Length: 99
Image (tube, rainbow, N blue to C red; front, top):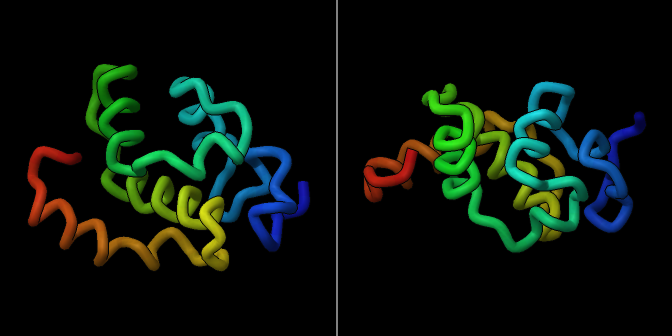
């Protein structure tokens, strides 16, 4: 499936940058079936919900991937998930209740 270049092109979750089968499964566990459902979501809350749903802590890089998907659907350009790693580290240091 071809990756979307803009949010308006994304009709399926697998069209989002950085999203593959494993993340698709995570989104489905969270009740997210369409890319448009991500535009108003908090990536840190998505991560916390995923951990609560599965009963385990996931790699923090999952937060980076959630950030990349949410930001893309909010209109930002596609960026690799690791672009958001430093931002995640700063955010979690300031808000340790996330993650």
